[in-house]
Image 1: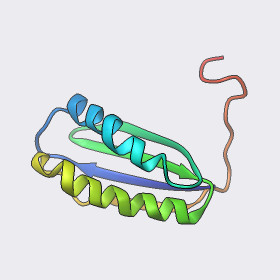
Image 2 (image 1 turned 180 degrees about the horizontal axis):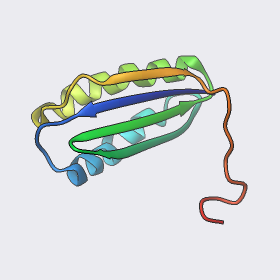
Image 3 (image 1 turned 135 degrees about the vertical axis):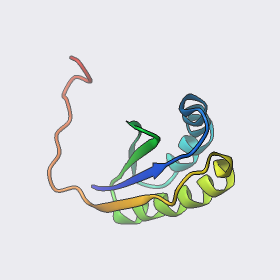
Length: 103
């Protein structure tokens, strides 16, 4: 598995509205990339937003980074979004709950 973590800062805008737009528009697009496993948007506080995208392959993770760059430039230009700090690579250790969150 491979993960891409993107950390953004934003100057203005409502995080709830941005999250809703991401859910309506970006999430359907990124989830169509071959090997998609998961996508998370994290409110990192103090005007920062972090996303985590997980794929079965490096190619999928790389494609998600390119898609995110294109999508944010087109859809979030008005919120003063920074260029993201990107961390990407192979997931070496992971564990998922066997019966879902909180089970």
